[in-house]
Image (cartoon, rainbow, N blue to C red; front, top):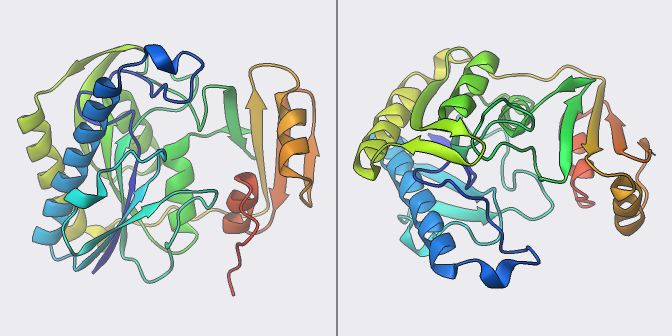
Length: 275
């Protein structure tokens, strides 16, 4: 049983702040605070791994989906390997995996009163798939679904969990905090969330064959819509032109018939090949 664990930081237990390490104001940002957030995420991941192993998982890939070294890899057990995310969206994921776990996720950009809500970047106002707003939860489930892999578990705040259940009604979930606003949440204690995640993952792995993959249907147009004018033009200039990409003042539109290729072009990964 092979399991792919996609992680993010903003939905981890007790995390209520954005990661501002790349901000102009990073000198005012406490390194101790962000390290605690990384510890919280790593603990959530360890709870998920424990539940997966108890349910029969023999190999686990953990993707640091937030990037910026947000998972403490030296704390992972030997059967789990860390795959930091670069420009490739979900590295090492292929058809050999049986299930996708999503740990530490948040609601999409524009979600009402949702803690730390965004899609990929706070500079982005919305991401749309075929002119319909989508978030990182759905994008991950679709990417795995294109390979026949079901998204079976989600942990995060209550708004993220509700978003996941709208997409995958049978998904197992662990709600680790309750959104009060975009920058405030009622957080459950760490020992309680550890149990919720471990038990939720255990149930998810045990019934993963009964949860259907979220399979994307071509053709696809994936749009990145920025909050400010000119960013789309600048990004396109820096990353270089791609086939089937149109650029406007506020947006970039990527088109393809293959969802995996679409996503990797979207993130600027030039080395992708399904062969």
